[in-house]
Image (cartoon, rainbow, N blue to C red; front, side, top):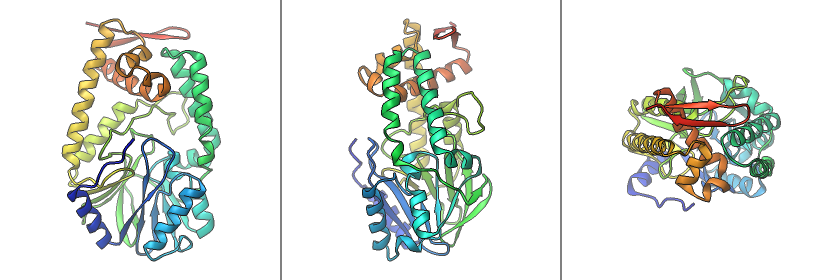
Length: 339
């Protein structure tokens, strides 16, 4: 996936951030989304927001970026996680180990981060179970599980030493930031808000160039259910849209200076997709995988869980609205319209 070209607005936003002592460090990842934006915040505590995936190349780029800002990795006092995904937390343990920095993350994600291998196994099994139930051939689901397992070396367990709660304020780089929980893209998505500067660190909550995928996950409370990720995500987007954000520094892509308009665009696109999926179910596509095939073709197989999460999210909306029902069998489920 090509990364977006800078715009005058995004460049001006980054220039303003640099004046405030905030340095953007793009760190490579092996994923289609491209580089992750890590942020170094000058002040006390010298703070790093997100750290990138665990690899020698990513660590080298991160170290170089910190040095270009006039510091060393060993100078860090605090490392903060915006959410649980491996491209954001993979290097946190390494960075904390080499610097002695404290590690901060949302309190409800502490156990998930500490038990990374176990949590990943649970997530992988949930993915297989859902893929099989919703129409993906079982042999394909198991192959995709093995592919996912191959990425686990990109992360390591994270010991959080400073858990924080939604609604609290935390000091990052000598500035107070209010913490907001914005679940959807992941169950632990967290944004950090500097009200005076109208500045937000958004993680993957909102990205400039692509829609964040609200991937279905295991709930952080340890329950055996699954998240209703798209419904949660839409609620979170609406809450953020109501805030007077002038600059959002996101986990990937460009700085965002028109967050409300962008959120309106994202929600409208989701509405159109919901109606398209309703029509496909009405036409007889009774499994989410069949719907995904009708929309994305071969991509629905190579990226089965991503596309399935998308379809299930819209079916959740349609079921909540009473327009579609799920017929749950012992092993498989089908869907039909109610009117």
